[in-house]
Image: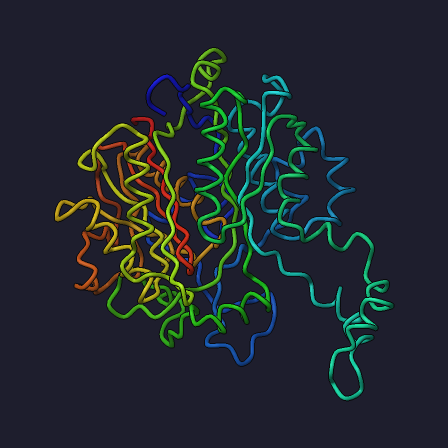
Length: 438
């Protein structure tokens, strides 16, 4: 952050994704052009536009090496039953990030470490509510709301809600890791991760904390998530090779694919990190947000909110658009969404827009978790002097008019990039990040 505010650097990264649980594993998959989209195995799918997803296979929470060695493992085993899959992914990612930062065994005043996480709508396991719903359903098939409030709710497990509140990601991590500083949860769908990282950076810049655990996690591998995507019209209807279902900025794109994952970064005040000899992965230079929701609902196809967010982030970074080396775009693979982003990029950068990449072709949409995972991917690439590639953009849409990094990584000596995300209803968030030079 420029001016008199304190500098904010990234000293730890933690990743749980369909393409691996470390930046090195993720980069190896991206470099090899691998994708994680395949027929779903978690549950049967009928009547949906497709049966594809990017699942983490396998994910055994308590056998995650970083957690098995954690000082709080005993408490973790007890609290696991109150953790939905989203929470488990996030706790694992946070511990990996803490270990990577060198703070896993302390090194910071607990009152000076906070947490700011992005989270999504966590879907309940259907069998947990089914008995109560059945109890309040009349023989005619209609729902008896009076019976629900009077009797049926009592059938539900008393601690049921604790598994599904979005703020429980931050709650579990703050308790397990003794984070006594500022705490917040942001639930803005696909923009959540970048918004949380932005707020965490500002907390450190203002001197309210020295370290922040931030990023996001989400899992859309759930029947209710499939139904929502189908009803919203965002799910890909691709009938070819499953691996080609999500096609960012491609002329044949027709929707996205559900995925899951967590991306957690440890932000730290520069002098604090320097004093303890921490490895620095990069620096948060600026952040911005915008919104271009239509009055009737949906996303403005002109992408005005994304343009506002990027301009704001660049202004906060104290640089010019020409200094940006690449854009890690949302690139969700929908007709309207990708075109809106492309128009925003051209509005900000003109004809000199930097190279653009998107990871959705590799692992679908991680929803609230996508921004932080994509940020980690760009850091992993730039640490090797490379921009991550876009998968399945075989025929770039001329209407988008972008320089898409396709098929293989592209060499780059510019360590500064913009990470953008936008929701289906127009909430946009952007970060300007400078990666540590290789």
